[in-house]
Image 1 (tube, rainbow, N blue to C red):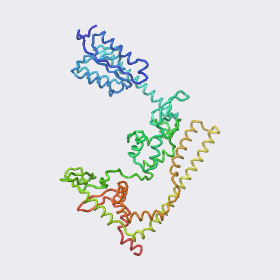
Image 2: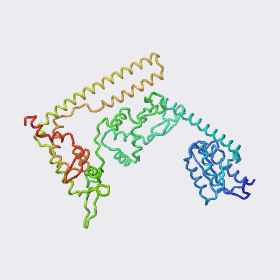
Image 3: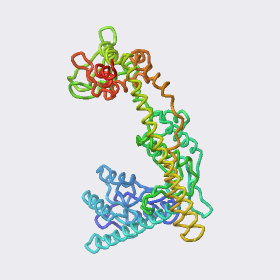
Image 4: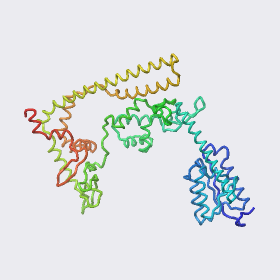
Length: 496
């Protein structure tokens, strides 16, 4: 049988697709599709010049690897393609709009789309039949998608997480269902949470530490990992079936709920951490602390090539903005610190204020901890009440377990707020250390390494500073400097 328009052999390409790895081995396999397409091409006098085999990609979208390659190959006039051959419509696409758009694009290039098992008539009735077939394929795909979603929702409600996570692998449980089980990476995940819990490492530093252990992870993935409650055994209510409350997972957790909630508090800024600002070149400690007085950008730094030597500069990236030599601006910053640090007399007057404020804050903290403790006691009493109702059969096992899960999650979060060391700091020692720093911060900055320099800068000029008229002009003055600069008023109030 010859093609209807040309008795000579024409160039054809074959497209085969399965949507899952399971289909690649069962049902209408790729090899079966390919064999039938080749037979169809030979029977109709086509010469197959290329094959595009799609493994494990959904037909609902046009963004398929081989599908896009197929279209690119066909639209390249050098390949002289006349026909695209596919087993049937649902292999080509399960989206009628995608199918029609692709077919029209092919027709504009005088390329015909033909199906081994389907209607190939280029008539109004033929096109109607193909549209009806395409609509049915799309409907069938939608039904399968809804069934899959319903099955996944049921699995999550029953405590079985169905998405793979680093630190876990899937194995079949006693009921024959896929379940998460910790694998060899679990120890690395635990270490990541241990590091984050300390509050002393940036996420980039954690990435570098883990890289040395042979565990590679990018920043975006690390952020998602630290926010994932599945690692502590609590499943998020992904399908909104549990009033937004956590669902207790049936898998073995890698960390405790207490550790997870503590890390969340640190990430949310509800707990202080002592992570330094991003490290830079030790030669330029003021890099990204200086604000350009002309355009408002943060200044970067570089070594500019002079006639004989390289000259270090702080400079703005905007063309036409000023730049400043390191040997000019850093001594000015040091001079600013020396001019604004308080003298010992003022610090002595201020000491009683600090002690009074400390005692006031300590009393408030004790009250807060007492309230949290009372809240935990109330939750535990409520837990005992629910257990009693369960034992008497007044509430169902399902309702009881759901209520207990909510209570346990609330208790875990409250206990994480109580897990800090209860020991009181010695105010005299703490004030002595602070006083020593304030009196010597200029010398500390001169002799410190980059990390400590930037910590000191964060206290002196937390929002950076502008350098205008040969003067350091801080964007925001630290609160303790505002107090210490009122030397006359403070001395007067204290009888000085």
